[in-house]
Length: 223
Image: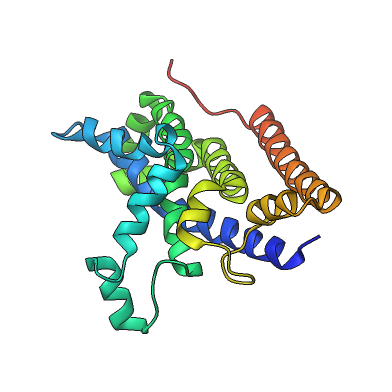
């Protein structure tokens, strides 16, 4: 069992899901409240990681993080290190490829809040922002929890983008999915099996908790 790769995987998944909470919630709020020019393009860009092959997405992210690119050169000038093949670069890439797993559940949950509840809060003197934080956000919580768990699980098991962006640096960018691949290539099937079972168990437990939570805390839907 590669515990170093396990630590990197858990750290990456936790940081990604925590980062996606404000980003996903902000995008979900924008899409649920406003119709604007270019909305379809924005939704398509958010959904793109679901349909693009991971190697294609990883390639474009790698090009964007190259030291000659704007983002890559800015990171080098600030830190003195390359963004690509680093944990920070892997974290940034994880936010991009897990973005739809955060936005879609939040968006669906916010869209299902009954408009009568929102209007009643306004009539009671609450501002739009207070209504959102005190009324809509608690009602949309099941979707938010689902989004965080899906983001965590997806990041934990991703392989293609991780390999393209992070490579295979022990203690830095080597995750469990990469370690499993290396073990299979080295015919270390017992080790590959143990790590695969750990990923399977984590995914099963987290998703089961989400279904249980949503069952006992249903969202308020439109009438």
